[in-house]
Amino acid sequence: LCKTRTDLRKVVAGMVEILGKKTDPDLYIFGAGGGAVETLEDTRWVVGENFLVPRYIYLVEDEPTKDKMTAFGQEWPIMALKDIPKGEIYGHISAFTPKYKERMDKLPDVKWVTSVSNMAKLPNFLPIGLSLRAYSFIGRTALIGRHVKINFHSVVPHICEIGDYSFISFNVGMGGNVVVGKKSCIYDGSTIIPGITIGDNTVIGAGSLVTKDIPSNVVAYGSPCKVVRDNV
Image 1 (tube, helix red, strand yellow):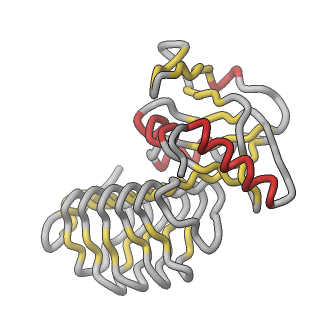
Image 2 (image 1 turned 135 degrees about the vertical axis):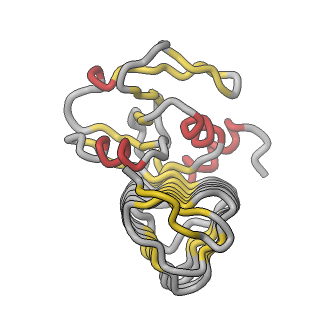
């Protein structure tokens, strides 16, 4: 039983040693908002087949308005994007905005790290840059793209596909064989019945019940979910 963060750090470090490799790099988290707070509060860092124990963690913003953030009794330094070190670094994107994630993913020499809550089961495989929060679940046969975030209490079951940079918010449930395209957002409490396809760059509003396919580049919501306007 881990009673403190120090205990948890020792346990994770032990897991690294069991895997035969212990790394101790600096880690750069891109985005210093609520997503960063969620990640700092509860996470296991994974890169490849190894758990990662960062030496120092830095938050990164395009143009910071402050030089640090206080959370959980600690101060976390914030640096400007232009000031990140040259050469290979370890990074994770905490922000959920698809366009931001796509832009950060183009940075050279960043080795992207996966973040999995201590209260979420480690998936059968770990997609690049995945953020999986507490009590969420990914089925063994689900396919997850780059830098996808799946928030608290959400389920992506068997034979589902989630495209690159997409965001699945709190308490989202979906049946099997659901496809969510790239750069799409499914907001809080939505339900998607089995076999549905949602296109690229589409937003599904909170509390929606999706019973029919939804095309790309639209905003849709309601019960049943209907297209309301274009997503520009």
